[in-house]
Image (cartoon, rainbow, N blue to C red):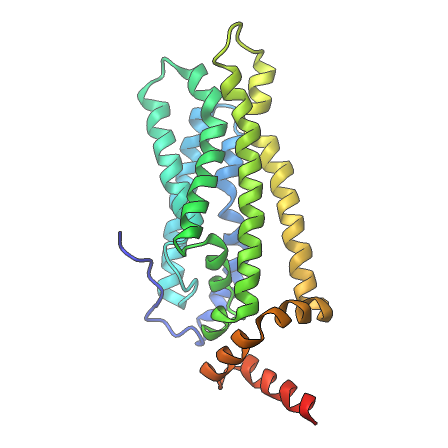
Length: 262
């Protein structure tokens, strides 16, 4: 499989970076819209088809900005790719066999959430974490800072947090699919509650977002919290600073070390 593109002819430090600064947050939100559509639209066939359309639109927008501004540094992004493959398969299945709507609908929630969990896990284990993509998309970080031990620690923490969120969503939505195997069939309210991922998306994803926001706030505002993390990686921090002596973070570390000695 072709490796994701990590460079661009555009100058990441040039004036075009302003375009990315404006677009980054809206596109970050739009990246989750396919999952929201899959749960919010009542007709699952329309839901997965519209989710596929948004996923493809995201891919095109991100690629255009990648070529124009140099950001995001990585294309294609893992989460966009997972949604594209997942909803392409579901769209084909939904329109190819319209005689088994009830069975397909009962398992759609698990397929979406389970596919998201599986895709994110495989990508994370192979070094293409979607959290890494988000870090690389942040123009505040230099290329060297993306390999900083504390930032790598944050990436790992966030990845495990979100894998837990996706796994929980998959487990709960599995209930609707398994129950559909038994007779008598469950009520439509039961199937909707457990197979349709809408409320899981809105509750569990919000909880995951809140946890992410709290961790991010502590990383920015709680000096003791950052120091406690950094204390675990003293050798790695020294090696990183020696390898990137001109980076602002390396210069800051040298200044802190000098102040400690004096």
